[in-house]
Image 1 (cartoon, helix red, strand yellow):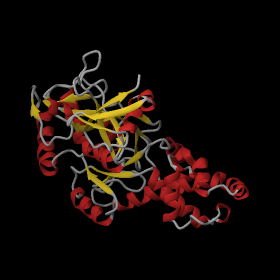
Image 2 (spheres, one colour):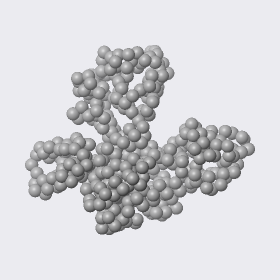
Image 3 (cartoon, rainbow, N blue to C red):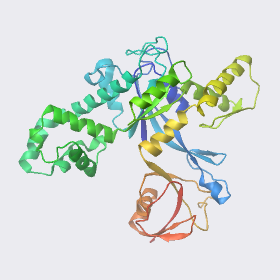
Image 4 (cartoon, rainbow, N blue to C red):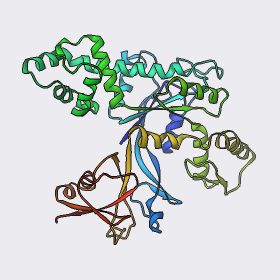
Length: 397
């Protein structure tokens, strides 16, 4: 799973990325501080199932803290986009193509309105962040149109000559965008193009389909950043009313980064996503002042910094995935004694057989049955899994 962090320059994208991953990246108050894409690992936070079994897990990847499991997810941060990015302005095409493999996008906007269209600092409240949401969607839609148009004439003519199924043809040609044949069929129906030959589509129809394909293959969550600044809360409420179809989460990336760095250096104890922290070590006056500001103006007001909420909602809501643990009814540990070492992320409504294949191809091929460990109930291959299930796979050796 890959989450792409995107947005215009100077909205706090790189700060958000560093806050989510603690990767060492350049953070600067000017456009294009990021040129080459940054890759890192963020974490989905899920209540660990080990507590349900009165034990402590030993994660193979990620970590578990206070019975909260932090499951790794890949994150990429590309340079800030500018209007006309799909035409190559500001190296836009290169940066857009860096997002091609992303499963979903986190669009970081400056919710305080203190960054203008060109990514330059302005007084808070003088820029409307709603423009940024519309700007990025337009850039992404035109990017997809460009991807479709490049091979379209030759591809559509060849499809018309062979009379191949339209959905099958489109999926084969553009599978690199993350489509499935069923997805394409659904999009054709929703755009009213299911009965129209590909070589008769006009540009408006191509754009309409490309926009629908973009929404399906690059679902998006809005990270309304700089929530600690004036005007931000008021703008956040207005944005949620104006864009009810979007998942919009207010956040303060700079606050999350400060808390994580302080925790890393054992000055405080902080669990990402919590509404509080406790002081452990010696703090100077500047540190005390900064942490008190975060405590009063971010955590107390908003319940968290919002960064962890963005990652969680991206995985669990926008991508609609669930976390499932492999385990045994009589033994939760692996051969090395590690308790519940693994956890897998799967699309919602995955079955026991899907899970078996996810754990190991041979388990899927030789699947006999599964056991729902919490209830000790034997289930078949079509058993639908739920978030935080623990499943034992029985396979033919």
